[in-house]
Length: 332
Ligand SMILES: [Zn+2]
Ligand SMILES: [Zn+2]
Image 1: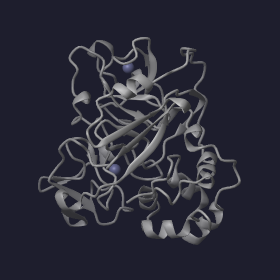
Image 2: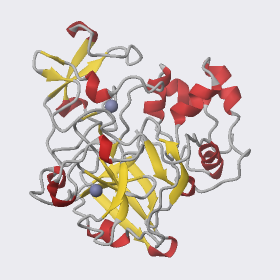
Image 3: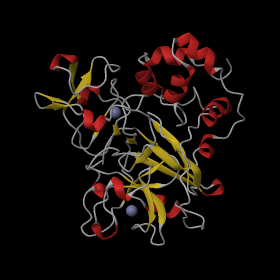
Image 4: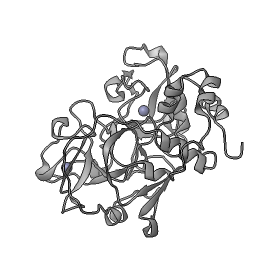
């Protein structure tokens, strides 16, 4: 499944740039006024062999490309809900799921995203969407907590196991229902850097789409971080192994939801090319054609670029084919 080509246009960027969900301002938090520069940390990170990182110093970005398959091991079998819209899944009987062999079911998913190396804190956070919100060292994708657009079902709390086959694997990951887009809903414990760094701050395990680095749940001195230590976007400012001077960074946590990152604290619009609003497809018309509300459609498409059509379709209870068909493509 590749979204490349279909939606990599200025028009698409404009749609996404317009889709910014602001919550309450963050208040009078004061952070370092220096320029954040993650280039050295990104370049020096232990990206897996299936990841290609291209540094673009001219525009202060890096490009991440992978096949989407995690470099670490994964489970032999997974539970796949037969009706992805019927959340939650934890209370469903075994026959609600099909059991798939990952060796046959997992599908390569080209991931190609360009992320700033000079992230900037935004005045107000932007809600993360379903679909990709960041990339991990393993080549897999970082998703937020939720399985549904309404943000009521937390994937990790909706874990279900029948006959020793689980919905989420031991790495806190799984694919979309069609076997694509392997992603994490919790600390990706199978990434070596996410495993315990005794007595030390976790090492960087990935980068969010807003450019700020992502860590597992150990802070300075190896102290376990919980949500109470973090802001509403699961971040804080402080030193890390890669940023001795301190940087705003995200921590995934293990104690209770949110486990993941449910809002961007950094500016995200810049990542998407900054087309002028109003030039995008007529989302109201698309929503009408699909029989969903424009609001739901916008939320499902989210802020990642290009949109994750599979995740959006799942959230809307539609087939990916139907969603793609309804979205205007370049030149249409
Ligand atoms: Zn998921
Ligand atoms: Zn920290």
